[in-house]
Image 1 (cartoon, helix red, strand yellow):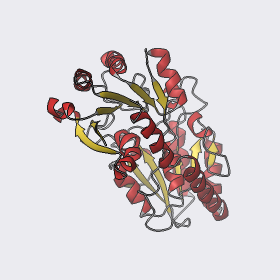
Image 2 (cartoon, rainbow, N blue to C red):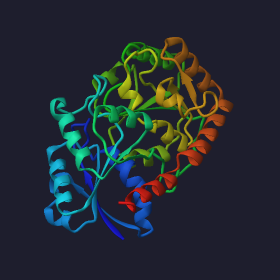
Image 3 (cartoon, rainbow, N blue to C red):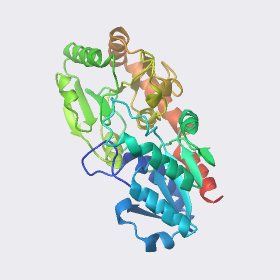
Length: 346
């Protein structure tokens, strides 16, 4: 059994002291099944609390998007003790846009990231697009692509989703990820609720004053990864909305590097969704079957909101098809198997 340290870190985009959501969904979720089957022994430690003794006693360390000098020191220590180092990355951390409240000092991020790549035995990318993007900017040695999955066994629904619920869901990490369409998005959503009495917008979001541009909403707060999934599984939603910078922006490489995590979550929890017609969602959502893809325009968003709200048959079809698709093609089981191959070939 391999003893592995996951080097935990604070969120890169939230000032409040919550654990990194990426560490949970990229590392803890796919590695827990391996631990349950006694193939590995996981130890999750904050990067500021890891001692040389702990590094010396493990078989290897895994990082997820860590870009601190402390993490460089831990990786260097691991190599001194002849331990393996794995670096997982699911964002282009060198290119956080103005639409993300990243808590990063960009002047030294590239240097730190190259040091981490130099010290790493294998880099794990979340998408092919991200892999291509970062390999153009940095010298990267051995790498693999392991996409993000959803843990159906761990995040089972407590109750079936009532698709006639009055609640519309919006989950948002850090900022509203729109630029040219941002003000129109608020307007089209507010107008929809004005003509839809009885419906209510529920928002999970990191602190963001822009949310006050919604005429009315229920603030569900900023919560850790597992709590968010638990609460969604205990609640019912008519559908969810997921705006994202799309074709209207010429330069949106940062968003093309991201993972379609909201589709995985909503599909797995039988919540039908409306998604901006952006690169990451066009690659996984089948329009009209597993979700609605819309251009970032007032007309398209307004039409989609009205259609999905009024059409129960469409909501039922999308909820079922999205669940089946995520279960079949994005299940954490296959991702765990890929991680096992990575770890046991070091």
